[in-house]
Image (cartoon, rainbow, N blue to C red; front, side, top):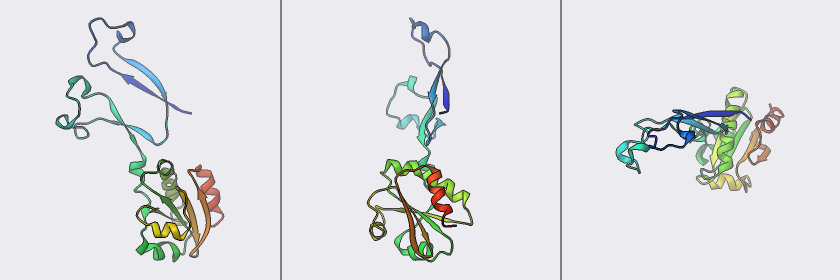
Length: 179
């Protein structure tokens, strides 16, 4: 597991600071978590006038930790019921479809994996996602009872289904069987 080093700079040191605060910078090594990243805090992210706290010591500190899945979830095109037939069932290439919902934690974990696969197999495989909350008829038609579920379609037929947030290697082995 990789790690990240975070450096803290105190804004105001108390008059009688403990020995560990007497240094101008404190470094701490934390484990790295996939799917999270540190973004610099800017005035456009948290405007001073809209912030909850009015304490000036809390403004301008370091950075924000954000979930990368918010950004990567838009890389794979969504498919709705009106386009299902033409995009998935009538496609000449194999099609990988991720069934997901915005409230599903494991779905957010697998989004970046599906995005990578979409890029890795460009021209060989089409990738789409179906929000089961918005398209319950598609989910019901294919017996989706648990999300995330990744299905592979070829020649209009469901060929494979993988349930849960699985490693990329598991999905690659499923894809390779149908290329």
